[in-house]
Image (cartoon, rainbow, N blue to C red; front, side):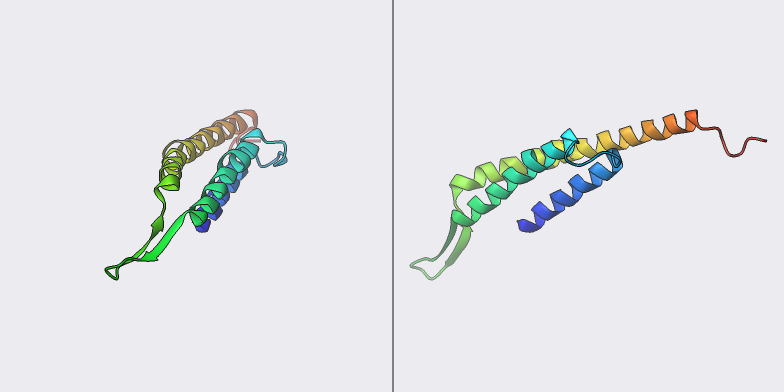
Length: 116
C-alpha cells in the first residue's frame, strides 16, 4: 500500500510538471489539493489498515490474514473514486491544457520554415 502512495505522488508530480512547471508548488492550488486532499487521506487510510489488520490461526489450523471490514469499505471506495475519476480527469485535463498551450505558442511565434 505504501507503494501506491508513492505512485500517486509520482503522478501528482507528473501532472504538475505537464500542467504548470513555471509556478511554485506551494502556489499551485491543484498541486496542494492533490497532496493534502488526496495523498494525505490515503496515507491515513493506509495507517488505519495496519491498525485494523487481522492475523490469526483458527482452531482448524487455517491461517487468516487480512483487513477488518471496518476499514475495508472506506479504503476500497476511496481507491475507486481516486483511480476512476480523479487521476483520469487530471491527465485528461493536463493533456488538453498542454495541447492548448502548444497551439497558442505556435500561433504567437512565427514558423521557422517561413522565408526570411
